[in-house]
Image 1 (cartoon, rainbow, N blue to C red):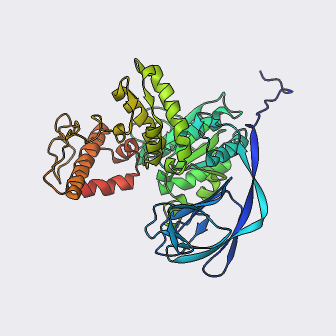
Image 2 (cartoon, rainbow, N blue to C red):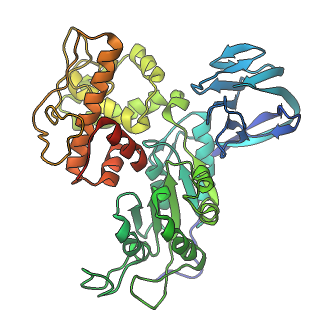
Image 3 (tube, one colour):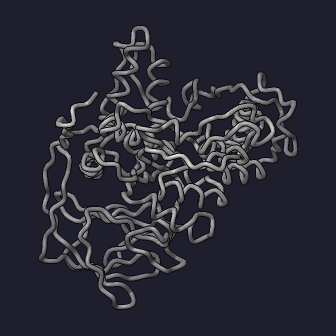
Length: 470
């Protein structure tokens, strides 16, 4: 029994403050916007800090980040470019007074006289999340303040950025850490079972309900419920989830009774929920109920200064599991190349690279030949990696009956480079998704989860490559 006079004190992570100069952005319509945040994104996406209504502007066009050297602007591979005083840039520091052109929209940038303090964690780790960049230390400072509370948190970020690690860290550094951490993946449960899996059901409530069963909310009593891929939650169930969050009570399927629940909610998504709200796919009231605190994890390509820390961490872990692993190492040249790689799979891809490269390197150096999952190295010396796959699976063939134990992906050197590359990509996509669909018994949602992409993206891709799951 807990002594009523005893309380647990959760100490925030040590932090420091940096002083940043505010700046002004003069929009094309003449309006002036005062900016006092360390990092902002500019583009046509409705959830950006600066939203630009211009068809020539990419959704996430560029970002302005304040560091100890000044106000740094980076073009994020936009279609029509970013310009400072008429000069196209990819990465540059902004002069104190200049004209900024984004797509066809011109902004005035002017450094202000006022300053603002931004709190940063002094350490390079929060739970199992690693990072020493300013953006990650700012996130760590926020998480350390939020963790001891019961406040609802929405974690946004691309697949592979570590959203589940945030949920785990928030749970373990909260007063609920002795309770359960229950993970509910909204994309991995068949649509007709989501309500039952979340809220439970009573015996006889539907065919196959042979007994009472508690759902994820009751499982998480006294702890934390992590709602992963919340953007995949069916629209007709969103009002029921909203009611649970507001009333803290559930109604199992087939029951007339309501049951009180007590758990902290952390949700995560790789979707743009603001856009989903605009498109009518996600309820606005539910979004704001979930996003009491919003944590946006950056893509790895936007925090390249963290790559050496992450690589060395993964090397240390891999050494413990690989026989003779203490022998392999990584050069400064290779590390520099890793920092230039785009890492579309983010930290998950980097981790897989280190583990794969360590095993294939033996007692030699880890190098960038092993990026991309090519087990034979690179396509150098005329050697082409073979892959276990569905042999000769042509357009229009279904997944059923595909032979995934034979076949190879190879390069046709008689074709022009571009044609050979496109054919190789098509073959790889067909083989890769056929294998994952076979592994998931034809369940597109599960295959998309395994592959780390949206279900809708996979549906489009399957149609493009002519694969029909059954």
